[in-house]
Image (cartoon, rainbow, N blue to C red; front, side, top):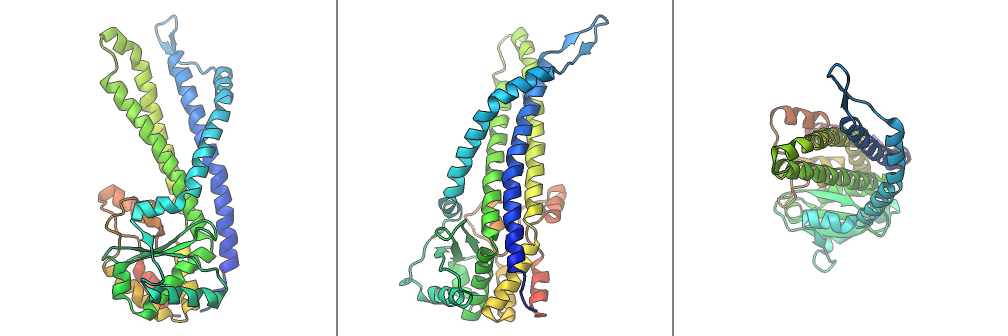
Length: 332
């Protein structure tokens, strides 16, 4: 089986990256409009002549407030995104505990990376290592200056040269396919959404605890508490939806594509299959607690989920079943 889909995969990932760039501001601005509308409806309610509460949306007022805050939101999020986007290397290193690996420290890894990149005409990426006995590897970066292949010390100790070549070829294929750029973009966006959720939750908690001293003051704050609570629920729902859409965009097919590309690059699909089998026995990075960064790993560690959460985690998983990946590689 020959890997022939690199240009198609690159175009697909570039299109999805642009789609995420467009979709995220639209979702965020939609959240802001909903927040302003809820404040307007709940804050402007009144009793009719029969004593019934009437809620009325003054769309003109909501739109006027919305248009006045849009430039501030767009500017703030734009600056936030640019800082996070271009500091992605330090972000991933901090999350995983990775450090630079020098040629003198491990010429074996450098020779493998150089040989593979020369065979397919790629630029040499940076090489990092994580001091961790568990087995894993990942690629990261958004451009030639930040592309990085990271391996764990456990991986270096357990895999032989052919298996390690297969793993590194897999990660280099992620770089060639622009998978890493798409993943980093999604990580930044989900991080912003998570931060907004945290701010709303803290506001709600503060209002419940310090909502006012007298009963009259608490009654006045009742509408505000309801507004914040409703907005918190909406923010959580939108954030969850965005996360699911991101996981749909980051199709599980990218791992199959990287497996196929890695097998072709190293010329030994069985070695890559053997490496995946060994990694699956002890995957993970002990110090990494960020679920979004775990999307980068060649095999994603099982998260500690049960019941309903476990069902949805498997349903929207960003990685396919490792046994299926091994089975396909063994048929090459």
